[in-house]
Amino acid sequence: MAGDAGSAPAAGDTLEPEPPPRVGFFTDTSVCIGCKACEVACKEWNALPEDGLTLSGMSYDNTQQLGASTWRHVAFIEQSAPAAPPVPAPEGRTELPVAEAAQSAGGDGELRWLMASDVCKHCTHAACLDVCPTGSLFRTEFGTVVVQEDICNGCGYCVPACPYGVIEQRPSDGRAFKCTLCYDRLSVGQEPACAKACPTESIQFGPLDELRERAALRVDQLHQAGVSDARLYGHDPADGVGGDSAFFLLLDEPEVYGLPPDPVVTTRDLPAMWRHAGAAAASLLGGCLLAFAASSTRNGKGTRA
Ligand code: SF4
Ligand code: SF4
Ligand code: SF4
Image 1: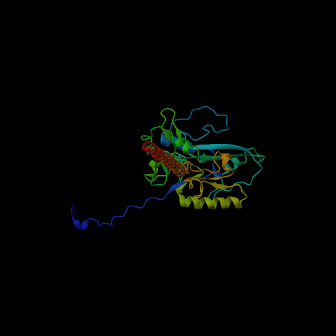
Image 2 (image 1 turned 120 degrees about the vertical axis):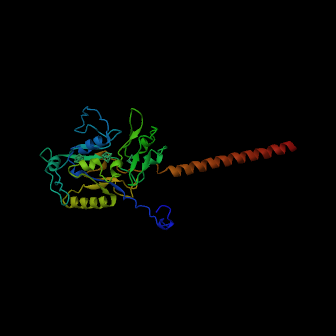
Image 3 (image 1 turned 45 degrees about the vertical axis):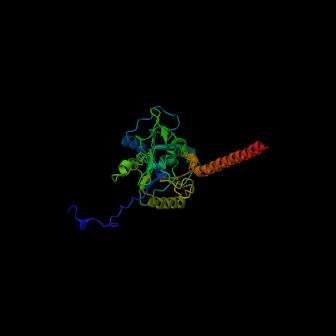
């Protein structure tokens, strides 16, 4: 009954709901077939404008990079490489003849395709968020980083702050855009559109701890199959950005995929810089006060004489 003191919760009885686990993407590029379903699903779900229909001449990679209207980008890397062992399917999954064919395109084993679906990394230490003066960029309850288009004032500070070159301003109005990790879908218990659309499960979505375990097993599996170049990227909480919510299994050096080999949060040195600037300002002020005091003393003596 309303107003019944007996039914009111006592102080300390009301528990806050448990926060959801931190979630992210494990993108296993070894099973990507370059179909671009992820790019299309992202565009459709988020109603993103097209990137233009001109051909880049850069292989099949016509979008070329992430941008204000390209929140997913599937890189196509055509490589001359010595014959490599075939990449096995992940445990419990059937072999992918299409992926196998893509890896051995050219027939003589000297040409291979590397395909990788890139996205915002949703960094643990996100410099874009650190420098945003309006609060447009914020950390969600899922540990992801979201930019709110109705609050962004178009200052562009976040653009050079991102160590991966992810976030971009839209030329028409200057506002910044990037992947939201489908915050609207997560909020109602749905998985992100790109992961849902990926036919090979190259993009795996879930709690970050589980994804890291799964990724470690997959790397072991590939190493045992002789794919010694398989490595994880962005999974390590001890790296320069504190680890990413979106991390990758790569089959070559990160630079080959257009990823920085050793990213560092660009705001890392700001506190030290402010401390040094403060110390320099204090020294200058102290010097001025001393000079003023010395001059006053001299003037006093001169007047008495
Ligand atoms: S990748 Fe760039 S845009 Fe994405 S969270 Fe990290 S700093 Fe921000
Ligand atoms: S998580 Fe959502 S917004 Fe981000 S790339 Fe995937 S579909 Fe696009
Ligand atoms: S949908 Fe999956 S397989 Fe297709 S391009 Fe994207 S990541 Fe690769």
